[in-house]
Each structure stands twice: as structure tokens, then as C-alpha cells.
Length: 321
Image 1 (spheres, one colour):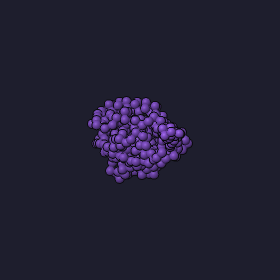
Image 2 (cartoon, rainbow, N blue to C red):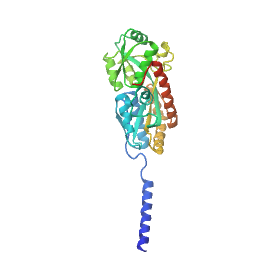
Image 3 (tube, rainbow, N blue to C red):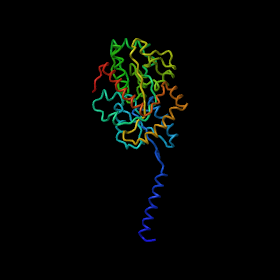
Image 4 (tube, rainbow, N blue to C red):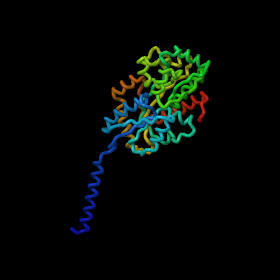
């Protein structure tokens, strides 16, 4: 065999070996996945990220690490994901607030919720709840709103979505509220318990343990109907505000440039997790409901939510700042 032929054969063999190695190389994922959460630990969104992160980690065979990046109405977390490699190893746990409300109320976001992120799967949606301390003078939601018509009440919120929901409640009821912003739900609940706030408007799932534990009192929920675990707590709408129905939702997103096959792998794992019996139990206990939307349905829902919140912002007189 001549030297040239040996070189050609060697090159061919090397190419074959490289091809086999590529075919046998582990695909996505082959290292830990990070979930970035815009809120502090202990919120309903954080709880969802940890539960579903654990489920997809087991399905995909890789650890899933939850990283809380609260602050600036979720902007810090969303920019972190936008600036991360588009490889599927950085996943955003996002809610209606940074994805559908921020674009309407904040002028300089530094991200585009539609163009910069690709939906992977919807997770859950849950109603909000109005809570006060156990020794609050407000016996019910009617008393709270009546007091708010006499003087401004301090309300704790932890995102633009909850702030908009409070502004909307103020608009329809005639009560006046002064928003006190927080980075997450846990510190709000601490201040409600300590009577540092008149009330808070927060996620029901995150507040449920404190409500059931007798640490705070729920005055009203914002769903279409009462919550089954709190049958004696009325909805806001049944107190005379028919149009006031508000749910918060959470969904997983990735960088828009993430390869479609990687997104599909994540989406398939999430659909498996969402349809497992354990997911229904988790959601029921948290006072929420499953929202198992695939990528296309989640995209359509996201766009529709922007328009829904636009109408709410207009009705409440909220303008971008």
C-alpha cells in the first residue's frame, strides 16, 4: 500500500471513528440544568419551579438547580436568561407579571417578552388572595374596602402583576391603596403578620400554609369561584365587582435561539410530568390548577394575556413609567 493510499485510508478511518463518536455522544442534556426564578423562595412560583424541576430532572437524568434572582419586577432574572447561552441549560420560570404586565407598565425593560424567549410549557395558574393579620380590624373584604374609601391603605405586592391587580381593585371599588413593593412573597407575609401592612394581595398557593396555619386571615380570593379549600372565603366578584377575576400563571421559557430539538426534549419531559398523578396532587394542595400548555398553545395564550392585561391597565388608568 502506498503512502498516499495509507493516508487516505487513515483519514477515512478517522472520519468513521469521529462519526461514530458523534453518534454515540450523549445528547441533551448531559449536564445540570438551571432554572432561574424571578421571585424569592417560598412563593407559589418558586414552589412550582422546584417541584417540576425535580420531576424533569428525574425524567431527563440530570440534576436541576433552582436559582432565585428576585428584584426589579423580575427584570434581573429575565435579563440573566436573555444573556445566557441559548443551549437549553438555562430555563426561565416566568409568570404573567414579567411576561405580560411588565411590557405594559415599564418603559425601559431591557428585554422583549415575546421576541427574546420561547415557551416550553405552561405549568399552573392560581387565583390571588387578599390577606390581613389575624388581629386586623378588617373583619371582611367589605370592611377593608370601606376603610380604603376613607384613607389610603398600604398594600404589599411583589411584582408589577400584583401591583396592577391592586390598582384594578382600587379602580373598581373606589378604595385608595398605596403600593409597598417587595422582592418576594415571604417578606410580605412577615410584615402582614407583624401588622406592618394593612393588607397584601398575593399568590394563594404561597399563602395557603399560613392561612391554614392560622397565621393570617384570607378576606377574599380573586377567582371565578371560591377555592375548595377555603369555602368560607368569598370571591371579590361576589362582593359586587363582577368583572374582577384575576389569576396568576407560571410557565417555563428558554432563550429564543435555543434549538428546536432541545426545546422539544424539555417540552416532552414537562408534558410527562404535568400528566402524572403526582402533579395533580401537588397543584391541588397548592390551591392552583394545572395549565399543561405545549409550546404553541402557550405562545398563543401569552399573546392573549398581554392584550387582556392591556385592557385592565387601561381601565385602571395605569400608564408605563
